[in-house]
Amino acid sequence: MMKYVTGLRCTVCDTIYSPQAVKYHCPTCGPVGTLDVIYDYAAITAEFTRAALKADPERSMWRYRPLLPVREDSPLPPLTVGWTPLYPAHRLASELGMTALWVKDDGRNPTASLKDRASAMAVVKAREDGADVITTASTGNAAAALAGLAASVGFQNVIFVPADAPKAKIAQLLVYGSTVLLVKGSYDQAFDLCMQASERYGWYLRNTGVNPYMTEGKKTAAYEIAEQLDWDVPDYVVVGVGDGCIIGGLHKGFADLLELGWIGRMPRLIGVQAEGSSPLYRAWAAGIEAKDMEPVEAHTIADSICAGLPRDRVKAMRAVRETDGAFVSVSDEEILAAIPLLAQTTGVFAEPAGAAPLAGLRRALEDGIIRADARVVILATGSGLKDIAGAMKSVGAGYEIEPTMDAVERVMEEIGGHAPGNGAG
Ligand SMILES: *Cc1c(COP(=O)(O)O)cnc(C)c1O
Ligand SMILES: [Zn+2]
Image (cartoon, rainbow, N blue to C red):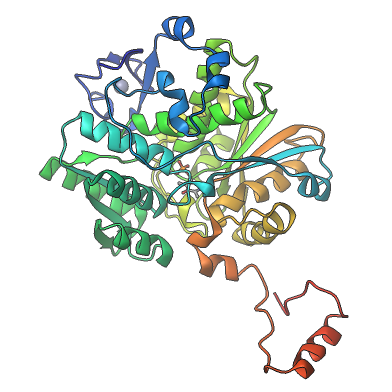
């Protein structure tokens, strides 16, 4: 039994189910009826405090174990997931005319993206479920995370990814020993195929949106932001949005802390979508309910936020509306430009979807959605090493030279004797 979990509530029809009776989405509403895990907060506060946390040397997401939906006797995977650094970004802030800006670097997770937080949870839940095989569909990172976490405990897994996912992500899957199905189609198609296969073979399903526990893994990023700022939450948290699970997780995390009385108010959540994959932005702007959204074609260089039918759309829309936040949409060019800007002002190298929040922040400042004197956290969700081809599009090519000092001098003359400068870029 999970000590403090009292049920699973459908986000669409509000029906409450027992976790023993329902594994994934609401049986009445179907996959759009994603479930919230509900807790007995009074019981938690009686036994778990901020002071206890402060004294706890555990430096991973599992420091919040009483707030997570796992059985007390469940073994946890050995990889260190979470407790990623929150860096003050002074130079980036002044570049943007801001006063208080932080970057949380979730590329520091074991498989180099925030998805490890959910996949660590998936591995624990699959074992509790008595499953032999876990499966997921993914644009790449959720799969890499599942592959790595599953490998850490020797759990068999089957992965559905679009065949055109970035090479580094596919390499992770193969090296970790997953069974890798490279779907000649979109993420949305890979997702539907994975759902069917899971039903046919009885595999445990990690899929975003469908599995209610993924939100619970991702919410730990919100706990960490609050704790790392000594419970004085920022005005805004800005994050890239594809399926909407991360932003929904942030919302759940801050809402938990508010229920516990550990924070005094909710930060406003800003979801950043790529122009070519912005169904949530468009539905939000048009006042359309998430449950009424229809699938659209999606294209963007930021593969991790490419989703034509965001699977966690109900939680994502609620996160923005209930926190009085906003969705913004940015072009691929703006996303690409944000990669070197983030790297050169903070030292954090993010993949396109991980740099998208910075592009979104610039847009939100310009549009007056965020004021320059607000306290803002941007969530860099994945490492730049995940997608070298994307990164190289955002910078010059460097100078290829003969191995002579003459050649070095010619380059120094060309760039005026001082770095940086990398040719046309
Ligand atoms: C998955 C992912 C996102 C988007 O998360 P959603 O839950 O799909 O909205 C953003 N950035 C990176 C690096 C990701 O892997
Ligand atoms: Zn329902």
